[in-house]
Amino acid sequence: MTTPTYRYVFLGLSITSSWGNGHATTYRALLRALAARGHHVLFLERNLSIYDQHRDLPNPPYGAIEQYSSITELRDRFSRAVREADLVVVGSFVPEGATVGAWITEEARGKAAFYDLDTPVTLGRLAHGDHAYLTPALIPRYDLYLSATGGPTLERLERSHGAVRARALYCAADTDVYYPQPTPMRWDLGYLGTYSDDRQAAVERLLLEPARRMRRGRFAVAGAQYPASLAWPENVTRTEHLPPDEHRIFYNAQRFTLNLTRRAMVESGWSPSARLFEAAACGTPVLSDTWPGIETFFQPGEEILLVRTPEDVLRKLREMKEDKRLTVGQRARQRVFAEHTAMHRAEALERYTREALEATGRTRARRERDGQLAAAHVETQSG
Image 1 (cartoon, rainbow, N blue to C red):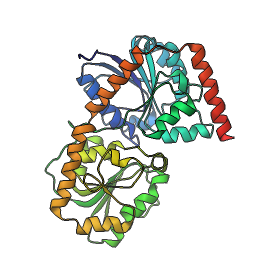
Image 2: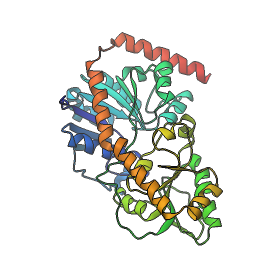
Image 3: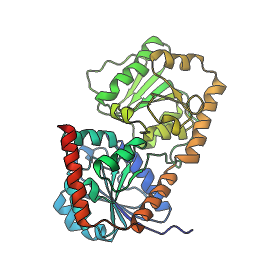
Image 4: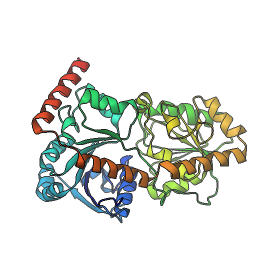
């Protein structure tokens, strides 16, 4: 069966800058795969000063990338593209995203989707009345709710929030970018991630404390926005920002890499990060915190190594034999190629697009009614 060629318009956080922006590599991988499969792709991002000095991919070699400075400019310049698209995708944390989404769901003649790369965080914000980029009434107006979190959260989105079709669209690895590369081994354990209050305790427990106890070991933390007041052990190499084109070398220079997950994602489960797949694609063995559903992505003990305490980490670093270490990394890489590449996600999005286009659309009145019910439910829950 030949896959139709679709016209996609994405509105997301910056794709041209990865500065403090974990969405960038996911969008880059997905858009590259969609373009390679023959689809027409336009990505629209808000021009924000925070990214001006850190545009590590100002001109991506796939699709079309445009910036806008205001909602008015967005409407004036891109209404036609929105109307002509088969699917318009609005991402989480888009500035003024609720206003953008309300306009998109009115303007689009094809289908409209919300792509939530932060679903547990989004639902927590909705419960507390934070509607900056999504409102309860807006959820049912989208034809698709694409979520980087799967599992029971998908049913919750449909049952409690009125989502028309909640579908998992997980992060992935771009295997043209992430792969094994002969590199001098610099660190026993490394971690790549932007600072987060609710993740820092895990950084302390699973990297900094092992570093203090293993004084001859070599450790690394790369990521932006860490407080200047943090004290780092002497054997921890600290990098403020690592552009994506240096991620592959960073992973390949580690004996093991550490995967850590934000608290809301741990509680919801089924929330694999892009970093998890990217490191595995490089063949670097991953030590990971634990959360429900992780075994559906990698087999614990065979393709991923789960750790809960500093002692767990130190045992892996000190006692795992080299052949076992290499085998774990190779098995994880094989699993990525089997299930977790950007091409797999592009194929999933094609299926979801076809499903939405072929389905009988709900009437505007039904959408508005569902939105009112969802809003009432959230108000009841939060009250």
